[in-house]
Image (tube, rainbow, N blue to C red; front, side):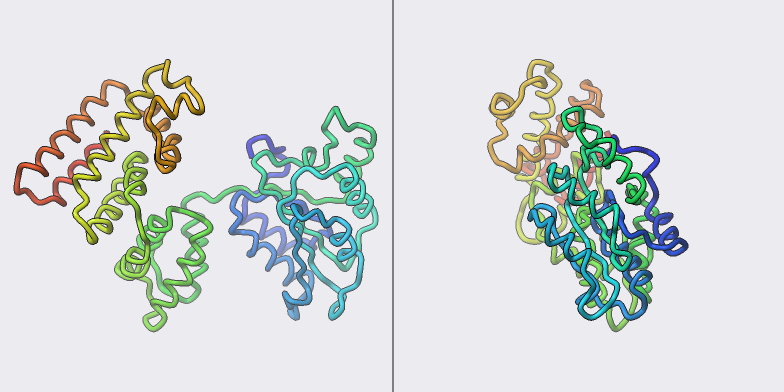
Length: 358
């Protein structure tokens, strides 16, 4: 969202503080980098605007902009609720409005229902009110000045920034409520969930159920509950190594190795991955696109092609001369696994640490 106007930017924490302190605007346009925060924001808005008697069934109505229901959205905003005078209407996935929709919404903005809060939510990477309402477009300037004036005077616009690592851990701790949980356990949980916002809430609820009687979330509980439940694949291991996350790579390796002898195959996959990375140092290969690049790098499985951005990132972060060191480690580890009686885990641990530390 780098192209959004800085004047709209606000941290999640400061935004919640503003909602608690100030009156709730009737029309809000939100840009959210972390989709998982929307429920928290809506809960605060509903509780304050509707009051303690807030009931999501009767006071909260949600629409998706992709469904093209402008008439229904605006009718809902304009009409009085059946069981309550106040309500909150959410319009998700807002992108650029069509000309007719834009005029309909801006007409409502001039005379909004004081008993309704309309929250429009955009998660587009290049969010800006100008793009949503097109008043910055040279192709649509017939009513641009009027629309811009209406939007700027009637709509409160906020771009909610993403979390720092510390803020994310603190936010997750809050979600555990009265459970005792330390930072190390949260970091381990994040590793198992691939830092995916979509997975985090389900992982939190899973852990709360698992630790219900003790009310304490320990590292062991995270490993047992989340780690064993997670069905890792070999490509998850390759990605962790390419991202130089040695701890996560070891966790995935240990999980996979519980099911089968996988060491030789993992080394084969690592060698394949670094052959691809090595080719990317060639300017002639690096500039290829589409089918030609896929053919040159032999990215036949879809999972290999999905790893390409991580291959590029690794290549850009490592001097070409150090590739010899990595291939040497892969070769020696493969040789030790096939010809010695040394412990497989110690060989893999050494290989992972050497590559991730390169």
